[in-house]
Image (cartoon, rainbow, N blue to C red; front, side, top):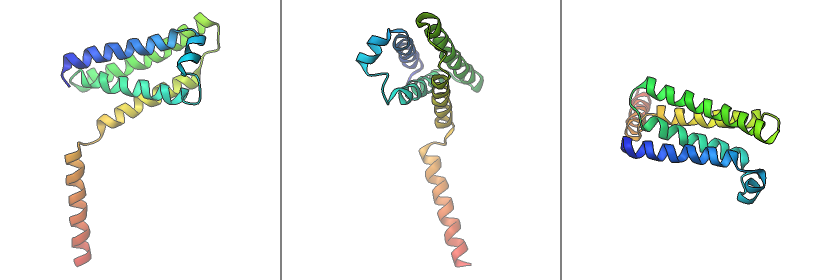
Amino acid sequence: MTGRFARILFTVWVLLIVSLSLVPLKVKFHLGTTGRWHNAGHLFMFFVATVLACRMVNGIYAKLTGCVALVGVAFTMEWVEMVSYHIPYEWRDIRFDCTGILCGVLLLLLPSSSGIKAAAEVAAAETTVSKIQ
């Protein structure tokens, strides 16, 4: 994914998060974002945002800055909802947003599939050698 495409997709994705966050509750019910999949939706939306944010930049500090900015988006959107709709601050939503961000970071820290394959081959070879001895 090129940096330009990732930036455009990231911008659209964050606008989608903001839009879904700020629509009236009646619309949220109609879209089905308030039911049993609500928490998973928070996790998924911020997971994807994290992957996109980290794919569009190079360098660990730029990636870290993007992740911190997403945490800021999560807290800000919940605050705007609280002020706009006169509802309690939804800490549970923040928890799922941050879990999605953490899952995105963990996914990006995993070695590539070729690295996993190489590690599996080494482990298999060590097991074979230990059985022979």
